Length: 423
Image 1 (cartoon, rainbow, N blue to C red):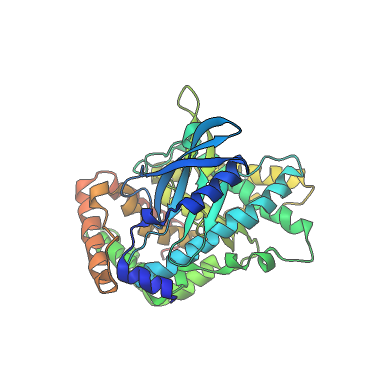
Image 2 (cartoon, rainbow, N blue to C red):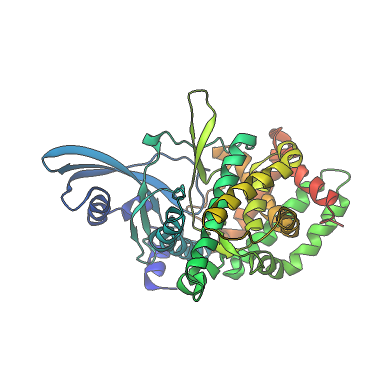
């Protein structure tokens, strides 16, 4: 661990204090040009508990002058959460490395691969500055709110129109990486972007322990219901081999692409027309971007962010929408599809385990009321077990207090038994 991280653990720095005038100036000039002169700036928090977990998201309102005109702009800032738990220090450092590299080095290459073939740029926010001092990381991003983008209510499962927009953009992201690869056949993408291979899920013993604790919580939740004995036995069988499962499910596959890695309904924004219909999506929070099977993204999204009654009957049409978007990018570049509709379906089923694991981990957080979300801001190493026990108690309570929880949770296990993942 670096000295900066040790200092962070000791002093419990307030995340908003990581915003500095020098960095605000850099972001402003990157956005508005070298003639922009900073007049003043203020940090304005706008998110609430439960909107973000891997970092603190705030904003900076900037007043500036340029060529004799006064104006202002707001930047969204992603801040190191400065949690004193060693587990979070290591994971946070990797998250900021991945996201900063994605925005500053990979996105320009992917966009070039798309626009060269007449396709639109990826729908992600513009990035104006990244601060990568260990323990004090900050990313300055475009504020999408003035453009009409807003967050979907995380407690609601995505309906078909919202889900299709995300799937189509995932198809464009995935396909753009293959177009980029085809432009440099002698050099693998991961040679230039080896951070794509760094995986947070198996980074430390604590990250693995997190999955083990989430499995125990799911087991205890299932004990409240009859007819899930098979699922309980299955969960018990996963715990001793969780490292091998994560490495196999998220590791190299025959259809490797650049994956979002953390695509659930909190990490996207939507723009709506006058009738309230979603017409555009923006992908956010690329801190888990990885080189893996596209089916990992599809499973992650569909099992964390949709109810069973929407996911199950629409699965074929969801995959068809994804494939159509992927195909459009490949055809524009005069490249062959790497898989057929049947093959991506089978790959989706092969990766169902990762969908189930992350559903087990995330669904409770989606349905928690903000005041019920365990507070990790002051958690020390020695309180990890206490934190996970609090998570388990509140998760079990949620089965009785929130009518959305039981069908959302059980539908994952119903489907996994139906398709044979749970024997």
